[in-house]
Length: 306
Length: 251
Ligand SMILES: Nc1ncnc2c1ncn2[C@@H]1O[C@H](COP(=O)(O)OP(=O)(O)OP(=O)(O)O)[C@@H](O)[C@H]1O
Ligand SMILES: [Mg+2]
Image (tube, rainbow over all chains, first blue to last red; front, top):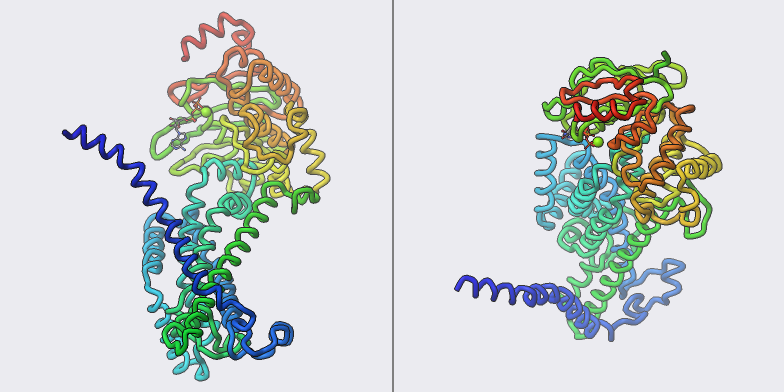
């Protein structure tokens, strides 16, 4: 009887595994189709720029009142800014955990990273909000929620992804690589920066992609730290700003007409495209860096950089 | 005599397990000096003690004294004033298993030269070709210098590692079974090269093959079970029968 059961399991396992694996692309394409169906009809220049002439908005910064353009810019700035803050810090922490920290210090750091990864994003938003309150009472009475604050809180939110991916990739490299570098008279820093990090760049990229995606979609953090429905294109780092996820949330929650709801779907589609473009850009950057590292040439037939 | 490496009272242990115990050894300049011994006794560990690579391994403790003659001067390998990176640039090592970097063939030589020695691109290119020619690899790879080094065969990778070490123009070369992945003829080619290089470098070679040891060795040492080395005297080296009986005793 147990043998029959075992054979049954044996038989059933492959189809079940396939079904589980296929459910991912099925969900993705289902979602995409739904978004396209609802969002595509609303896509037009007017969705982006409202009544403002597009060229005037693009070239001369004419204010856009009734379109997605300021929110697109806001999200782009937000993602770039928080990644600029989080990527160097995350990679550096990953290096520290993988190469330098040992024993109890490592365990403690590890615990902190896990803890940070477990913090809900609304808490991160509250933290930013409380920080501003504190600043107002102490050093900086004029402090207010703004783009920079949101970027800071988002950076904190995505930091664990970067740390974990850098760390696990560095630890997954063959130990001979480090030994080889040392035997060739390279300094520990040269080994890390010029051998190990480039060799791990593919894995680090996946952490960066996760971070970019998370920073682009998060609404809870920015809700409490500076996003508003109407701010125009972002100016200073200390200004309020608009962002796509908040725009979608706002439209979907408060729409008056069916057109406004379909605008929300259009905005969702735009957010998806924006994130995909950022993914593609980081992938290209990494591929270029890796090719340069592997061949010492800037392009396929370029000069030797050695 | 003209010695190049002096090892005094060297002990190396991994996680409390002693591998080498109070080892004394004097290696002559040039050579080749061949080191033989049973597998797992610590030949690789001894080579790594010379370029201080053991300290890159976890839980390794080294005591004792190693002096090397680099550029005409004696250097205290484990001395506090010694910069370990400078030492390793002058003491090349070819690993037992080929350890190419995951980059292109030419970059395998160019990247370390550039990082460690800071040479110009022109100088690197010149050294690269010369080293590849010396390692008998140039004809096989000259058309695929930009290919990933992992696409080379095992033997080719081993010669690439040899070329990389040669490109540094070191004073001392440590070779851990440099022909283990090569066929008979290619191995003979490398042996000829090593005999030729012995006029320029000090060579310390680990070998598993008695025949190879006989062809190569100007000096020979056997690593014993107790973590010490024993010199094989000159007459025994020339006499195949005596060498065989000696080996039988030791292995
Ligand atoms: N990184 C390490 N950590 C722990 N023990 C090690 C390490 N490297 C070597 N050892 C131990 O040291 C001893 C000697 O190893 P070594 O590699 O020097 O032997 P070997 O003489 O080169 O052997 P072979 O001829 O098989 O290459 C072995 O018992 C091995 O288990
Ligand atoms: Mg060995």
